[in-house]
Image (cartoon, rainbow, N blue to C red; front, side):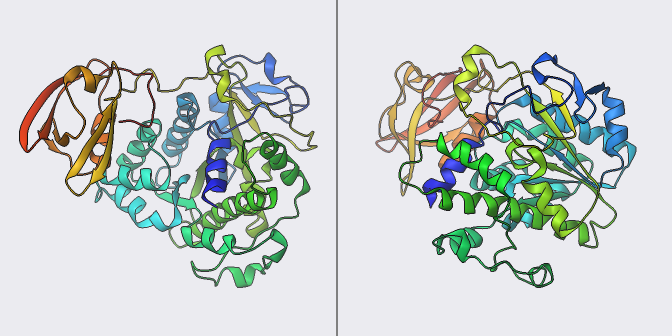
Length: 410
């Protein structure tokens, strides 16, 4: 099952697969658009950001997609968030795919200021991945303006339950009335009968190196992800604190395009006006094209979304620094098991079996502590690493640099 979950994460790493650009927009080929263009898909008319925000005002739920590793997708999200929050203060909430439902208390504590960034990032990494820098400006803006953060994703208990079924056909389809009374130990109501959604996911699955896993196993997990996020959205909107809120949903594009992922499943539970905004890159730099999956998607007679916002592709690889050291949490502390040739750690003098105890005076007790502190550094920044070597304390001055070594190392 872990391999199935990992495969989903990999498929949705960029938030979108390769697209045919002629039939998805009935009046305008998306490939003809330029960076910054915002297209109203149903009419083929380009609009300004102000016009977009005006039209979004009538939607109770606004889905804004993303390519997870494209910082420009997240810039679109925060632009829309700021514009709506300024127009309607204290009436905006944001739901995010990256946090599990079980982390809602941590999300609340972050917004209230009870949880500092390091502790919140630890939750983020456990729930999602070590990519907090892509979302940092969004989350700090929300914290500054006390905008509620809704954790959307499926809890581990639901993953464990669905593992026990051999096929989607064995899962009970419950009525909405019953579903709303269920606790966190019960699966949400799930719809496996959407042929368009199934064909879309199957095309992507067919190109993924998933080994011997079955499509049925993969698909029921994908449906669970979408249904659990839909359930979380509806529960918030029907709650006392959410009844007067407009909610923005930040999630991978694959979960919202065509509307058959999360939007249709929310609407099934609670019919409300909604809009789908898709930040999209139509011109991928040659050096980044290896990140795209070459998928022949089926033709689907559905509208791609309500709006497409054209962005360039830009990741944070050129800003990330790496120590270039392989470490492990041990009973003795964070232990070095090797250094990468030519890396910052090798140049500084770190050696195998060193125990890293501090960085710039900040204690290092776990691998996460080290990764978090390094993540705050920029290329050219200097630091001091303290280690124990054969129980002798040593310190090394380092200059952090961008590395093209394995991203698995801090």
